[in-house]
Image (cartoon, rainbow, N blue to C red; front, side, top):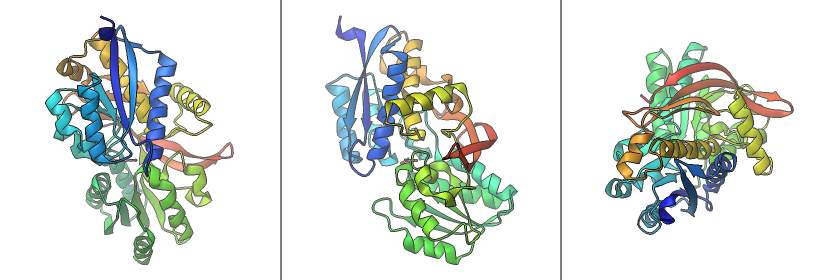
Length: 364
Ligand code: DHB
């Protein structure tokens, strides 16, 4: 009887290796949610089991299997990178165990298993408002540079389609390798093409490395605006990017400067618990992922049968630190506001200050 009073949640995250910054944010967000909300949901005691996949998809798959078979977790969560989420699709389908995606943003992931639920975002959802904003604000030509894998290709394709529909021209679509990228030749090519703007996507942990090179090459000084979804302008690393990034306009679901009581509390408590590190959308994913799991368990009154728990995620709606979120019951994707923001200095620090909202955006 004792065991049945506990619900186990398996969180798989890259805690070491090149994506470790994503793991740190995700786990910090998840633990903060539990610290602030207690360890009870649906009348049961919640136990969080954290596993390090080191950012390697084969390890993510093996850990998912072990968590389901040996630990008997009711739900798995995490997934700091698209290939890590894709690796568990067949495992969760066969075991009928829901998997809550806290970060991975390639649109196609949720179509690969009916047991995926995404609380985070997709790259088309994040990027389309950037394309609209650019087309409506005097930007006529763009070169895009993305990390060469699912979310980068999604961002590039979504941007080009919407921007060209609105009369803009994408001069060239450049793709740099995900692992150990040398951005120099791509940035040189982009600068030679003299576009009005450079559109960027890399996974958030790689933002600082890319942006330092973009700034060293003087894109803003050459009159080339630097735009895109917010990943390459990551909130955790924004202060280290230097003043060249001031004025950049991007589109995103979350800014640490989002003006709401829920976000003020989240940012204050996150910094307090993590040596003053600012949360980014990955930390937010950890926090909101735990919220969604608690809310689903409340709905089932602690029942952990896989298909019943999966149903409970569909249609969940809550006020997140990012604003209102609903899990679309048809697609299992988040419906949320996407904000247009500009980098400004405020109280001595750089922040993404939101100034326009595309409300209740679905993933296209
Ligand atoms: C993905 C990872 C990120 O860190 C991010 O900011 C966006 C997308 C991904 O791999 O899907």
